[in-house]
Image (cartoon, rainbow, N blue to C red; front, side, top):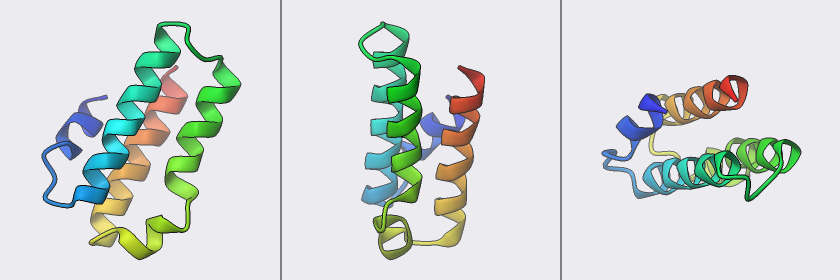
Length: 76
């Protein structure tokens, strides 16, 4: 979650929005609003959308976002 919190300070609005969504999905999962399979699918969708390649300002930002989301999925 620390990695996602760092991305919230990104200058890239797209990366910031994806980080916000990942945090929101995680909070919803932890509170019981969604099950594990739904959570996994939503988190994976964040990194596999067509927008990843077209909107990421840099490969570094894309890699940081993917790493943070992957870590969250495996931690829960």
